[in-house]
Length: 176
Image 1 (cartoon, rainbow, N blue to C red):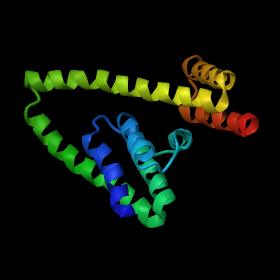
Image 2 (spheres, rainbow, N blue to C red):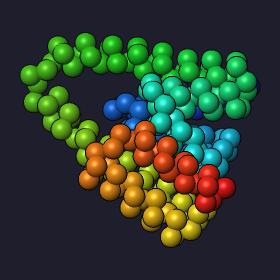
Image 3 (cartoon, rainbow, N blue to C red):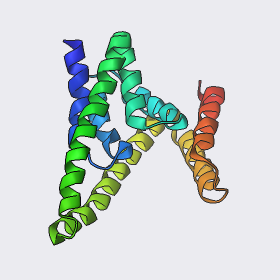
Image 4 (spheres, rainbow, N blue to C red):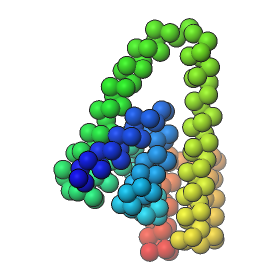
């Protein structure tokens, strides 16, 4: 039964999510944290931060980690399979359809609405992580990490992996 639940937990977000890993992370969180309770919000945020620091698509890393954590190697295989195969099949079908009707005004309007929806979902996820950070680390630490990360990313154009690594080191030294 656990394999079926893992399959559904990653199949559903990947079959209905449009826009890649960042767009489906809130959907995966809803399944993993909210529906099945395999992780708390803080552990999910830490897993996401670590996953962002590593190369390759975030959704498959999250699936592999959660699947392994819940049901070992078999769980990791099922979760990654549920993440990759349905999305690949759906995208191939959608790509063929969109390419065939690429000049259609409806297709152009639909494509214009995707970005704002993804932006709202990412804003909600950011707020959720910020709130969780305040609850677990406190306002001062959360604001300090956020400010240093913003300056590093925007002013110094630091690679996000280094920013995440720095936040992990800070958390390990001062919050662990």
